[in-house]
Length: 296
Image (cartoon, rainbow, N blue to C red; front, side, top):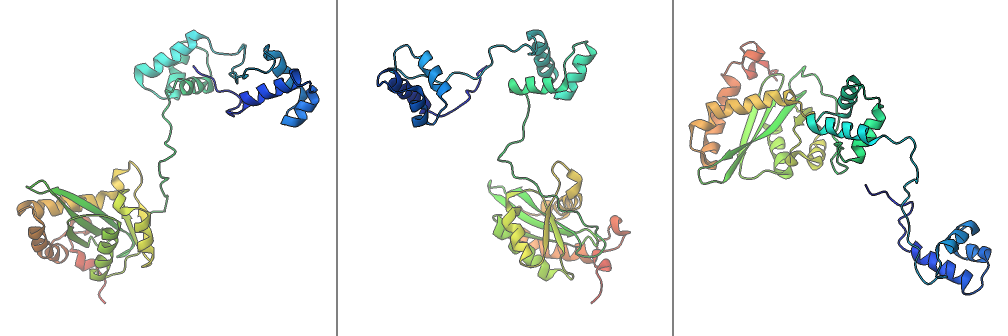
């Protein structure tokens, strides 16, 4: 294991050599050299003692590892910690309790420190974008919370077809559009067109963490007084309504026709009209989405 030196200054070995050279070859006093280089006189004395050549070679920076570690863990305990970690891939807490049952006396902090020193702990990436924790509102009225997502479909020729979908959690009103590419601008444009078609006002839209729903998408929505929140990480139920609608629209419409942009654009308007006005839903007591939309 490599220990880090107490300094990383690459010029310090040369500075030590020059200080020793001025003292031993030029006749400077230790205190004069200390004032010249900005170090204590005791540091200059130690440098002179380490260089028998009298200032003709660099004094390299040594490791800051202590010479004695009386409280260090024994090799037996370190091996037991590493073996328990590698064998079952459990976290430090489980390793600590497993060793405790085996009669190995070691603290939890020592277990974590040993795993960290052996590079056996998983750490959060410093480059990972922090996720927002916007409160999820209750879907108490139309437009209070909508979920937006994209469907990726492979065409027979190998190209990709994308379908934007959005659903209102209160009324189950839904809308979808087929596009040839997705991105922040396409997502914002779809949300804008969906707002114009919807018979109610959008208050908040929830999406996953796809690149097409990044911070720029959030700013584009805020320009229209629409709030945006991301679903929680590793919480599949957060997007349950839109995921179920994605499956429904594929089973009842998209999978029954030719997989092409032209076919999808032709079939979607008629299907969405039937979905919102005639198709009953168990989640809203066998009503249609239009039945729950307030009449203007």
